[in-house]
Amino acid sequence: MGRRASVAARRGPVGAPLAARLGHGRAGAPVRRRETGMVTAELAVAIPGVVLVLALCLVAVGAAVDQIRCVDAARLAVRAAARGDTAAHVRALAVEAAPVGATVEVSARAGAVRVSVQARARSWVGLPTWQVVASAESPVESSASAVPAAPDHGGRA
Image (tube, rainbow, N blue to C red; front, top):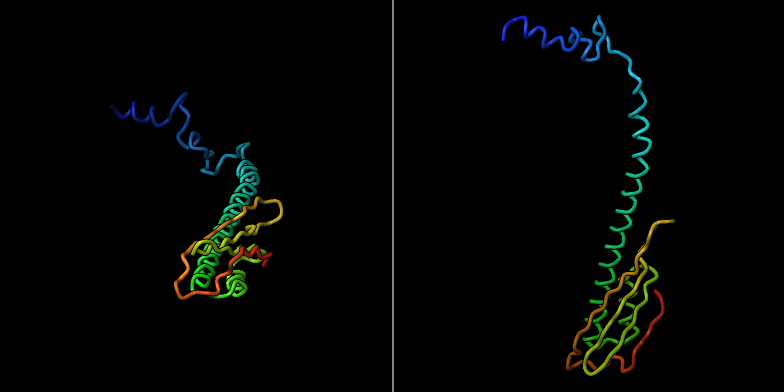
């Protein structure tokens, strides 16, 4: 390719100088375009969506934390019940470890004890919430004698 062909290729169609095709005027200053507010408008639309997604993620993390607390409360309470602790003490342990407002149920049957913990996951106004549930069951130890004979459908924490 000769020198004339390369100069013509750089100039583009109809002999427009390279600086003009790149958006610069004759003195190298940027040429004003009609798209000057596009980024601002796009940002104004995108930011609320990003904030909503972030809020939903935070609510989901909060629900996961409440689920873990329910699981821990059920396991702690069922171990205490299997050892032979009283139903009131078992329920108090579960209520202490569970999220605020959780419902704890303790039941015994045929040499086994079961503890269920339910709670409503925390949320912000207008965002969805979930019901988190955990239960644990364990055989009663042979030396345990204080396991409740009838179900204890305890109230809310």
